[in-house]
Amino acid sequence: MNPSLRICLAQVDYLVGDIEGNTRALLQHAQEALAHGADLIVFPELTLTAYPPEDLLHRSSFHDCVNTAMDTLLEAELDIHMVIGYPERKPEGIYNSLAIIHKNKIIANYRKMHLPNYGVFDEKRYFIPGEIQQPFTIKQIKITPLVCEDLWYPEPIAQAKQQGAELILCCNASPFDLYKPHLREDIINQRIEETALPIAYVNWVGGQDELVFDGGSLCVNKKGKITHAAAYCEEALLMADFYDHDFKTTTKENDTSDEERLYKTLVLGVKDYVEKNNFPGVVLGLSGGIDSALTLAIACDALGADKVKAVLMPSCYTSHISVHDAKEQAETQGADYSIIPIELTRKAFEESLCDEFEGLDKDTTEENIQARIRGILLMAISNKTGKMLLTTGNKSETAVGYATLYGDMAGGFAPLKDVFKTMVYRLAHYRNSIKPVIPARVIERPPSAELAPDQKDQDSLPDYDTLDAILRQYIEEDQGMQSIIAQGFEADEVKRVISMVNRNEYKRRQAPPGVRISEKAFGRDRRYPITSGFGRHHQGK
Image (tube, rainbow, N blue to C red; front, side, top):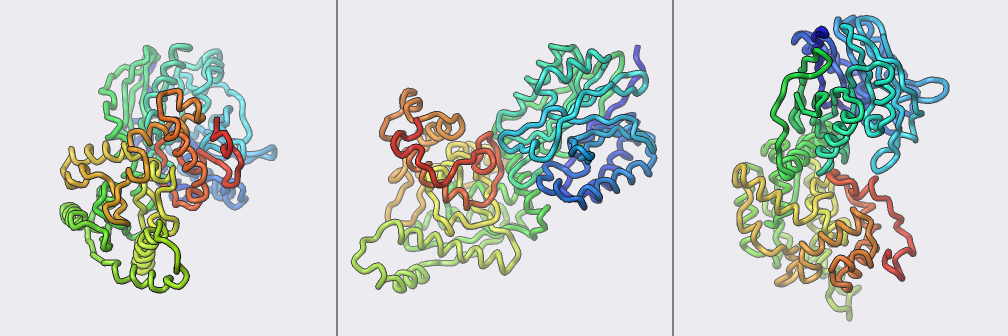
């Protein structure tokens, strides 16, 4: 029987670029692991810098800070093996590396071999690839660490097995998307089937701009069974004993619904964006509709109700029940709220423009003025208080341009930016299943922007079930018009939706960042030209 090796997987939330602070936190976590009898602590990819450091990697002073941090770790002389990710600058380029540190020595160094360059990943912009290295040994156990993408290819782990590795460590920076947890486990099981090598997988947790790392660190034995698992969206030091060539303990797997994982991810994304950027809180417009209601719930859960300010801004088109429901939710959640009617301001704007608009019929211009008045008021409150403005729009609206530039699109962060409207309803039901905070009428009423008499969203858009289904095909699956029609959707409806998506790229380019939950979020995942002739004649066949 091999000697028992106690491993700690450090599922941690560090701040990008805060190398000094990250080093202090790292040493503290190592001390905690040591106190629990750990022989080895494994941190996520690029531990010292956090992920992704982006163009900070182009700065010499940044690498000087990394070198200072490495010296600090060596000087600590801790009697625990530490697997630490760092950018390793060499004359030939920068490697995405792992250092294995014990006491005052780097006993091994591993360099990432496969550099992802798709979606939100731009690693070939910064790094050069490394090659497989010999395993290092602790307590007679031969261990090979891999870095994130290396596990997604069969060659690195196969080469590690050929070199005698008995255990694989995988250090990751794997951001959340709705179906990623299942995919990660499938990849891990595939590698185990190929090699019969157990795998310890550690991932970041926490928000970084639009990315949220959801954790989900785990250990999987030779039979493909999860033996240890950390919770999603929480920091954790996951302890696991490895002996006789395998992980033995079994654990209950993370059995969470899509809605629960997604809601926790949105809460974590808002919390870290606000707190890591040192905002004292947030402000948002609360309309009595479902999008702002869900955003308020997320904000209160993320920051505490005492840091959330809701503003109701009724016009002559705002129904009494919208005001009543908005007040009810703010009071239920304990958030501060104000009511600022905009009717006098709306009339003042229209009077100022009456000469310019003489002889022209009313249209969406007058509707957009109301949205922009609200945007001005909210930004004024944000400026005066320092609280960041949360926008409340969802992915369905953003996709087709059903939002007002410099109006309801104004703000610093958009929690629902990548959430389709149909999922907004599912999340509202989920949040109310924990404790009812969103009035039932808000969920049940037909959605309306309330910018014109008796207005309903479906006056301008297909029903959301149909709209979201078409948008998923066009945006997330990259399907063309004919392919979507062939799936049974009405041709004119598909053409109209695709046309709206294509002509509103300029709006999306000016939208605030928001939590990414899919592989095709608007932003770095989906990069389409604003000025383009593609689709004008064949609508993206």
